[in-house]
Image (tube, rainbow, N blue to C red):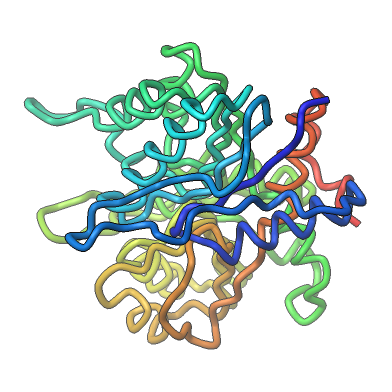
Amino acid sequence: MRELRVFSGRSNEPLAHAIARYIDSKMNEKRSVLGALDPNRDFADGEIYTRYGENIREADVFIIQSTNQPNTHEVELNLMINTAVLASAQRVTAVIPYFGYARQDRKDKSRAPVTIANMARKIWISGAHRVVLLDVHSNSTPVAFAALNVPADHLWVRPIFLHHLTKQEHIWNDIHDFVVVAPDVGASERARAYGDALGGIPLVVIEKRRVPGHSKVLNVVGEVAGKDVFMIDDMIDTGETLCNAAAKLRERGAKRIFVLATHGVFSKDALKWLEESEIERIFITDSILQTRPLPKKITVVSVAELLGEAIMRIHSGESVSSLFEHEWLK
């Protein structure tokens, strides 16, 4: 079998190291699967330089890179893919824990861009044979890759969150005291899946409207009075949507409010607003490296096991779909 090698871009090196440690432990590797890059990685003017520090000819190469701060990280990802192809890697898989530009997935206004198609095309042109995605904002993202004949494994973080929550005894009283809430209509399918996984607890949907500069909550569809709440979303950017939704839920009589959101983007004053909000606890993942101190109410749950397991199964030709369940977690 071809050799498995994992390489990290600069977006989230701690996550890449955690993934490699998981794979090493599971595969009983004597040599770490985490490969080396040439440490001289930039020109003086900031031009990105990517060179592999070891032979990867005929190797099965996995590149870990989130594309937050896309003007740097997305460029580095494409350079790493293309360099691996030119270095004669047998297969190159881009593992993208957070995929930027996924919100620009449709032409909803005249002269509006569909940027996700352009992002997928650049990864295809760079030579990627496969991509691994995690809770992307829109299903249009794997579709964009499919249109280019690039297989995309779209992983859901739900089993990781649910496995973590089962250990949080202080949260649970009775599961029937909970409802799951979608903070907007677009998040309803994701929230419903959580409700089903938790035994069919009710779904509540918040209707909102985006107006220039902010979003406005219009209505809460469903009953939250006297209930604890799990609010489900794929990302937290400015935090405005979640903070406004939490205020409206409290106004409607909700008790404790918990948030499960995969990607902590945290733009502008998001951390300040979240700290001052009605939300009791926020769970995010390490898909994006957090470089600022986080409020105590924010807990980071690692996706290293999920991504590491996916990499091993892709490498060995096993099914990845079983990762959508949580039974594989110990």
